[in-house]
Length: 389
Image (cartoon, rainbow, N blue to C red; front, top):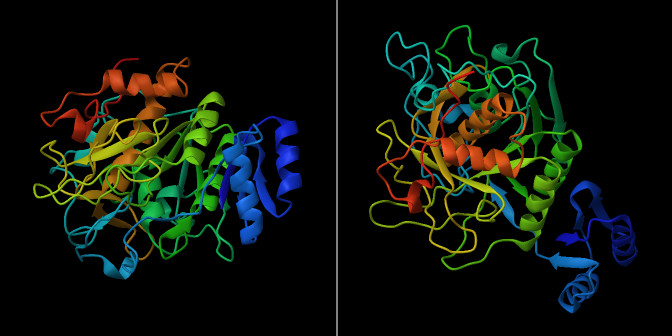
């Protein structure tokens, strides 16, 4: 049960007395509570009473990197599948079948689309936290690189037994010159923080996500990339807990970007932006294809007061890192678009030391390339890297 309280010390101490079984995340003023029904009811009543100590109490949701029941592990390379909220779709073929970029381009279509291949910035000095299924710690493209890691999944190490997290980390901060592939990473010199908040099956709980955000804020990460989520119903509101946490992250200098979700089946139907990307203070990322049109699966902004798409990035047939033995693989989803935005944000943060948190989000929107699809589907447009030093 995620709970958010006032973040001052007195309020946190008062909350701990009410729920001694809580795992408290002090930097974001939130907690994860495993408790009896009676204790849960008492906490909910305290929140409803507006006593100022507890601001919101919510049941814990399960969030996914991919559809429940569809295990996105290396053996499924080459299969196609639906792409639910926050997840990725398996792409075509193995890493050796296509370059992922035009012949001789030296970079994948996604890297070229956002302009990272011609930007003078590399993300140096900027910290990106990727909260996902972990990272293949033995991957040759990350060899010799100092990477901070931590697992928030009980009984599992940071080592990625899924693939989704390695793929997302590669997009955000993969090397500018990988040994055997075109460039697929955006901010190759960013400081990478990898938090495992989803298990090797690609799922996790809200509490683990909050713990990962708290860790990222503690370490001064400028950007948190979350390619995860769960679907919401049309008209359903956003999480009060995650909105409060996102605001506190912004106050600490951390911008959170999250996948809008993959529940749409365009042109027949458009699904609303999923949780937690539908929070007003979290940047919701849509996916576009190589023609820069919204992807068929990408969720749209169907609700007011949060629930809008903020920005778009490449999310179809995206090449990036993958655990051994494949090493590289292509998948599709708003999961892939999200680390593109995180990487581009790192380039902007390097270019402008004043661009932090909310100001960084504003800079991303102001520099975005206008697209032909409506703002409901692509927000401000295509995320673009800063072009001039």
